[in-house]
Length: 93
Image (cartoon, rainbow, N blue to C red; front, side, top):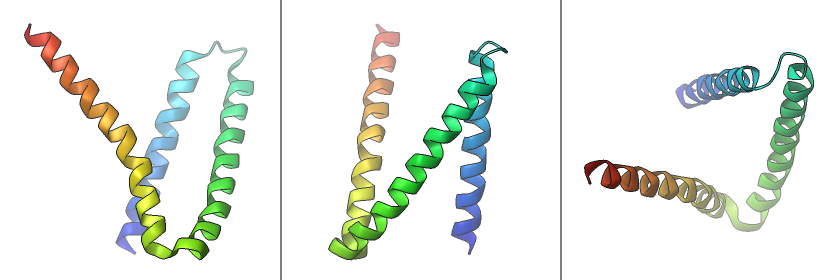
């Protein structure tokens, strides 16, 4: 239960932060359309991945689903760490 609460809080924080970034980076006249399109993409992605996770779970079980999720998280994490270390290296030169 605690995990689900934390997941909900993290989702809400990410959604609010993303909406704020969109609102700040788009002219006021275009804001409703851009925000609506962003919401559409987010909901389509959620529906697609929700459906696919059931299929993947049926094919490879919880262990396989967890491994796939770990790979999807690992790639951006590696990119962030590499970018951070390059930034530190260039700052010390």
